[in-house]
Image (cartoon, rainbow, N blue to C red; front, side, top):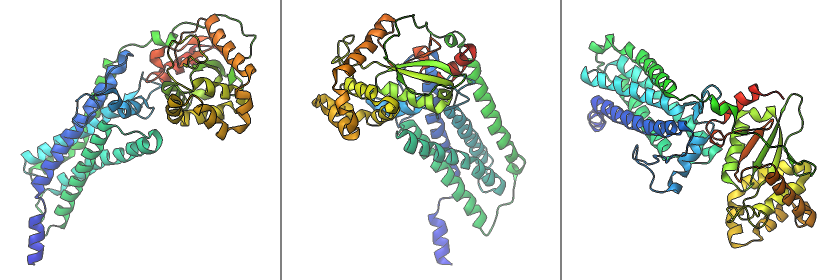
Length: 411
């Protein structure tokens, strides 16, 4: 008996647990609000700094410090309904709604001294399980698909865990207690918590959608592809011709991180299946590209040559280059032949072709084709049936804008 009394004294009181859940829900709301602010700031289709910090709302001290936050923000998993809304509805808005509902519920429990009432604790456990489940799903995506760590996301995960554990312990203590406090004042109010959570979701999401600007002009594209000489074989075929598919030309550097991210978003959207895709290689490497004054991605010319040599296996080489992008560029900075060695080890059949004069000539012809067709010195670019996707729509607005371009143009 004495041992049992001591164990109960060492455990947190029901009121302390509810206070802990309240504080954690407010913290989670702060992280979700900061993430939503970062997302909403990009609705003007411009580049903005991110408030990526373990202190909600505090901006990152360096661009590299927000790399994980930027990657998760621009990923196709950061929002819902991306084809219906430009950028979609941020998942963080839903997180704000749930954390706000939990904070309101715990606040009412503390005011009405209902921290031991069974109905109140059961409702708290139900609401508290929502951010826990969502955090498990989003955390798995970040770890295993994006391979990125976002400080704001981690803050939300931690807040969700505290909310879930606090709610579970409080409910368990009330269930195991010999004397269960009868339902009092809160018995008539607890059922309002679920409608409150639903109302908060509706209000916040509706407010977000109504505050969005119009994007009608962006769906018309940003210029067209000027007619030019197409007699040379300068394109790489990325997909086989499909009946009814729209002709698409992609222009990118295989060592460009933005190009890799664009390819991943395009594939995740599923819209690539509606495109007959061709690639024009545009390495931002002055060793072969006379249009750039400074090499941005060393080794890009060598990788581009390998893709040209691969023929039907071009996409295989391209995917490998994307996967090894950081290693290729890092090693090429100190050793100009590093890309050649890495490609030779992985694709030995391409070694002779990569260094041939014919391949260098073909790569040069592709760059001259870009000049004749007045293509901007920029990557990535996408032309659909000759119409250029705006640069501002290659990230968050990709699904929304491209889906409308596909509907508005005839294959």
